[in-house]
Image (cartoon, rainbow, N blue to C red; front, top):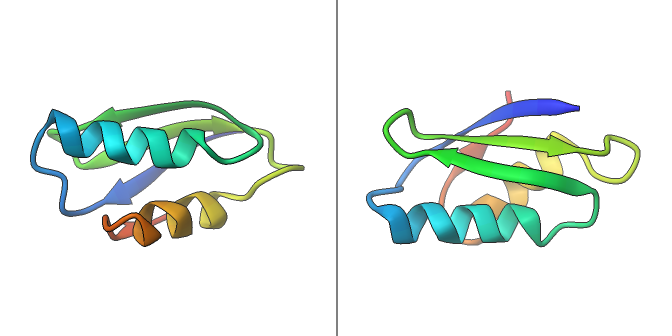
Length: 69
């Protein structure tokens, strides 16, 4: 499944890398890519292993408020 997650607080490539790394560390996430200008995280994941909400919660726990709505 592919999903776009809104992320706030990213200001630079280092922020984007932290968000990507946080999402990619979850089991079931196949691909994580940030569009810094749009303030979004594009993820591809196995919905039987992890949910978009769990990915957003992990990003939020890393210091970048995220919403999978």
